Amino acid sequence: MKIHIRQDLCVGAGLCVLSSAQIFDQREEDGVVVLLQDNPPPELQDAVRGAARKCPSLAIIVEEDDPAGATSA
Image 1: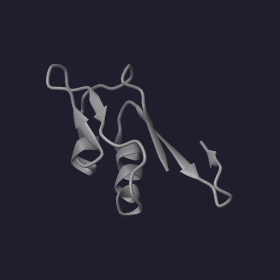
Image 2: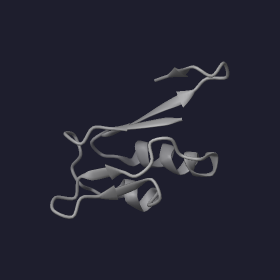
Image 3: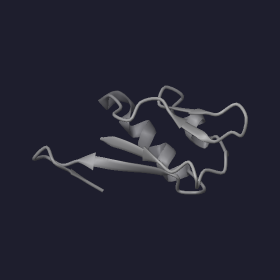
Image 4: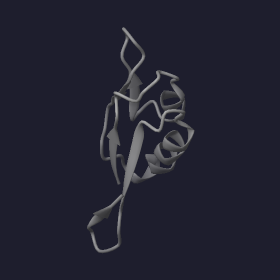
C-alpha cells in the first residue's frame, strides 16, 4: 500500500487523524493533512482505508499493492 495526499483538496476536518494518528497529522497553522508515513505497515492499513473513505474532500488516495508486486490505483 502507498498513500498519496492532495493537500490542495484538504479541508482540515481531521477525520484522518482520528482514524490513524500514526499515519496522518495536521498542520498547526491551518489544519491541512500531513502524511507521516506513505507506506504503512499491514496492521495500520485498514485504518488508512477507513481514513480515505471518511475524508470529506477525498484528499487521501490509497494505492493498493497487487499480488504480483506492482501497484494499481
